[in-house]
Image (cartoon, rainbow, N blue to C red):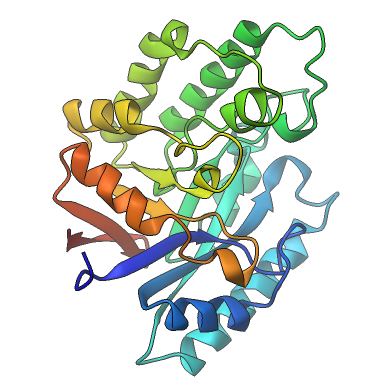
Length: 268
């Protein structure tokens, strides 16, 4: 493990509304922690693209990443990424964003149509099964669109439902829908990520966890990335080693990074 190239393909700079530090600080942390590659994947929530000025912030993000790539050339592979949120809620906008010249696009769903981010839902009186059904139905729509590289944090609602609020969420009811999502991703040449942020949060396990990563592999999935979802320099690379061990346990022999939207496999 110590000689294997380490990479973190999900991080946020201060070009994201919830990011804390500039791109250069994230890159410096990556070098200090011995990473081979780092993708800066700032938020671009297309359901509020103009309203919350993502049309401007994503351009600033790209500008800063391209500058950093030159500064760190020879020490760190810096990848121009984006976390594309809620493409299902503004497909025309999403279609334009993915053509903007990124190395790597994460497709994510932080809220379902007409609802707030799962982080901000008042779960008192909510029907958790219905919430999960809504989420996975829309996630299937996203996977069938498939114009991104990997699907971010497949089990995102659990971060809040289970991790922060201590409620019960039965994903067994969603297994058929999960299979449809994974099959759609594979058919569209998309991968999944192992998001390690919840190893340092209350949930205590990756998004998704081992059984879903194994299932993706069983269905024929080959593209898998690992990302810390860091929003500050100290979290860059956090949980990456554990994430790699998990994908090995699921039967993968390689992990992936992307350059100019093309997958590059690295042996683990």
